[in-house]
Amino acid sequence: MWSTMRTCTRSVPLFYVLCILMFFIMI
Image 1 (spheres, rainbow, N blue to C red):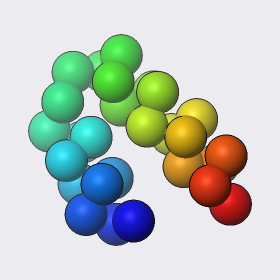
Image 2 (cartoon, rainbow, N blue to C red):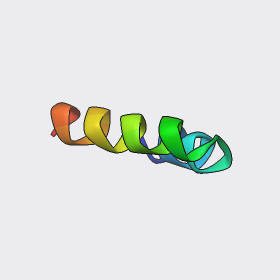
Image 3 (cartoon, rainbow, N blue to C red):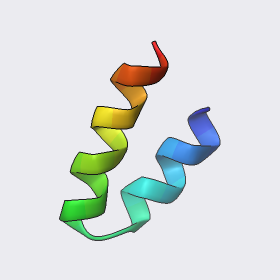
């Protein structure tokens, strides 16, 4: 799960926001 966040951090801001949303969905 953390590895996914790290990959998202390297992506563009838009993807970063999407990753945050998906992160909350996973929780």
